[in-house]
Image 1 (cartoon, rainbow, N blue to C red):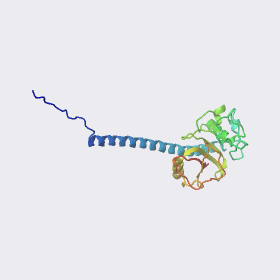
Image 2 (image 1 turned 180 degrees about the vertical axis):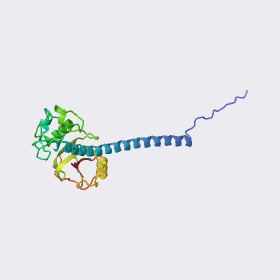
Image 3 (image 1 turned 90 degrees about the horizontal axis):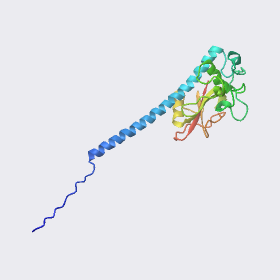
Image 4 (image 1 turned 30 degrees about the vertical axis):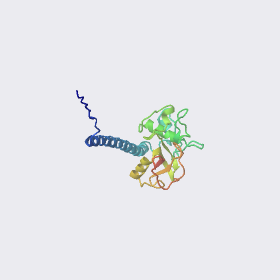
Length: 228
């Protein structure tokens, strides 16, 4: 008898070029969707920051139209609202004495005092109904947060301004540049919007900007201030 040997051929095969192309297209679509989503989030934050600046300005103008006084500095706030504290009526938003301005007092042991007009500012606006928030107790004068985990604060002078200003902190470089460009001239040391490079969160506002231009590194954060 003659033995016949038979060999089985391999039936395994790799991906075809069409299948690989389909996978690459799907990956591209997923990456594009992720990047588009991130850009939409960034644009939303830029819009929120701009709305914050414009909203505070509008609230101040409305308060002044109604009461003929600057919120926080309002000399008659204590007689208008029971339990409220009045400012000194000198036309500027003063700060508490000491090396750190009360602009960034995120925690207080009680309602703001007459020496803390930059906290009274928010209390008066809340009592008048122009901004949301607590109207009594510890939280009445706390500065509101912005869209980038920073704080919105007010004070008199800083970054080359001599008038009352509103500031917003902890802004990523891309957002800071876009806000300044859309609202002003894109120059950190001049114009209606001015900025300084942060070296720590929620910094004290320096007398003048220490930078000539913005640097978009993906790591830089900026403090932006606007004239009220």
